[in-house]
Image (cartoon, rainbow, N blue to C red; front, side, top):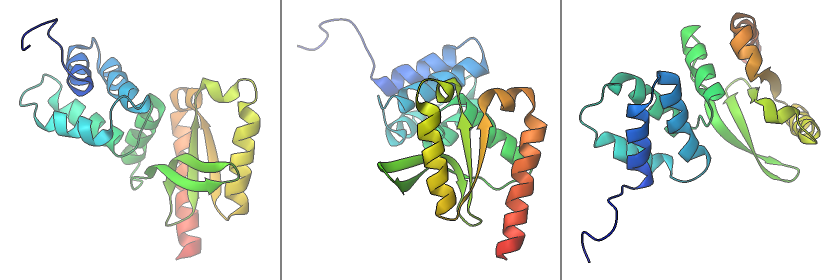
Length: 180
């Protein structure tokens, strides 16, 4: 029966509507991140739905956020980090890069495979319960395999972004010189 029940849209449509109606750009970015992070939709489906949007008061902003999310950023910290990297002239990192770990697949927040640099953006949950142990084991596996790992508490990106970015930039260019 057509027309029965409440009108509704799919996850992708609801996501895009919510982002356009958000009270701030930051809230809009969060509303784009959450359904992808929670695997309620895929980046491909979200991007396809976005391509169908003709007009939006946040068209330019949402276009950039959706591209970042669809290329692997899954949190506001990762989105902020990508934006900050562009600002200081670093090439775009691979986001959510997959590696083999001791207990299966490992997802890295940002990596530059050409120089062997990994950056992990640690939200608050990384400091709870046994998570520091898991993070240390993952980091040690990366170092043993020859990669260089920098950790960034997300609060550090907010409070001292220039210092953290200077370290990432210095590491990237030092490793590039060493490998070139």
